[in-house]
Amino acid sequence: MNTSILLQVGVKIFLKNIEGRYLLLKRSAVRYPNIKNFWDIPGGRILPGTPLLENIKREVFEEAKLSISSEPKLIGAQDIIRLPEKHIVRLTFSANVSGEPVLDEEHVEFRWVTPGEMEMVKELDEFTRQILGRNFTKIT
Image: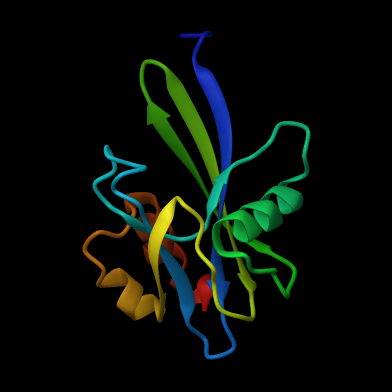
């Protein structure tokens, strides 16, 4: 067992608007040149020592200038193992949101989509796709 591997925790969130559609963000190819699936839901790494829900709210505000309007609900956990150097535990939530996003420098486009439309996005992040497939009824 490699005890020198870096362990990180990430949070992601399916944000549902009043029309029942979910926010997808397109990552900048310039900022993320090694990413092949550019579309994803908001989120990122947690700041150690900061509660999970504060991290989710911070990421949503940083990436889209939105505020969550309901209590986030945990819908999935995933191990993302990038051997030999990194292990990420990704926790995915769902919550309601109102307003329109204002993007940060990490993203170049956004879409509001239904879960079915999200499944059809070819460049959807593989880990978001896994959660969507397993938890469709929890998300909607």
